[in-house]
Length: 332
View 1: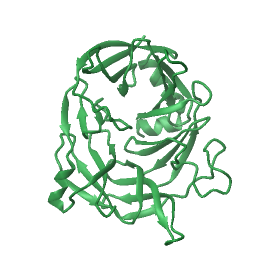
View 2 (view 1 turned 180 degrees about the vertical axis):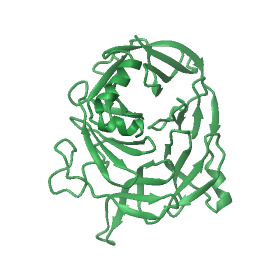
View 3 (view 1 turned 180 degrees about the horizontal axis):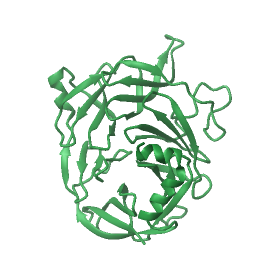
View 4 (view 1 turned 90 degrees about the vertical axis):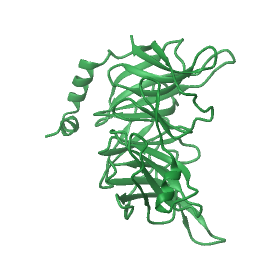
């Protein structure tokens, strides 16, 4: 039986593993060291993704920054021209634990294509997806299947509508099935009788998709944020209701590890002389129970990069002269 299976059957094991390797609950993250980093575009588009080595994947440009602050790979969509896909527009991207990157792009006629890259930036090929829809989020199951969320047209003018869409595709881009969504929850923002399933994104509800290669985790903002966990077979395995640090906390990031998920919450500025404050809560991915909480020290600023799940974090930030740096922080 695999460790992952044990973590699902015996959720307390995840707590035991974490307590043996991480700081105690309620820790403060303090900057430990900094290294120069490539210039980060001020128009950085969230979310950021990580692989199991702690490499940071971001855009623009679509690239990888390692734990030493070096840009070690760039992922160029123009490489897909060799397979007949030109003028692609990047929509979103996903990263497998081994660093394989999948760029979900749109052709000029708005058809979805997945452009694959190895972790060194090499291009092995592209896969067009069946059907007509506009993607918003997607997740990869180690490249063996892809889960896409978005909207799809229904009807024809003047009665054309865009309805929520969720589809599972195989590795060749063939449509497999549409997910059967759960009923809207009380904190999902969906009104009774609405056509929007509770776990799909809406204009008023931030949604983030991540995958550990085996399951996809779809996080939605709410008074009590919810995570819908979906298997590679397109089956909704469970829904986790999370306890945030304070009422109506704003979700701003998600990371997924073995038996754990990390959610970044942000408390907005409450005055002209105050900065936004970030909180990082780690939950058991089988039960949704809170395992540990971290807060930033006053001198630690920047955009969350990755964590090693043992109390170490990286942040993309700038120094006093405005130069990009990678900050390594540890729990104290």
